[in-house]
Image (tube, rainbow, N blue to C red; front, top):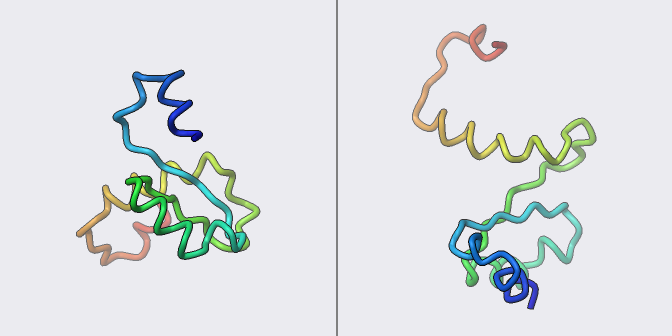
Length: 82
């Protein structure tokens, strides 16, 4: 229902990738919820447990950084601090 209404209001966003950021409450992590979202092609951004120092805006950067660093091997640990 939500997606249908959203697509009516914002048709320019209808074909974009969708991401949802859920916290770790049981109804969000239930297999039935994960299966439904996967069936609809909706990606879920993982929420690390007990992370009060991370504002939700930071979750956008994690997948981007992960993709950028894919296949990169860091040999010198001092580079990790930068």
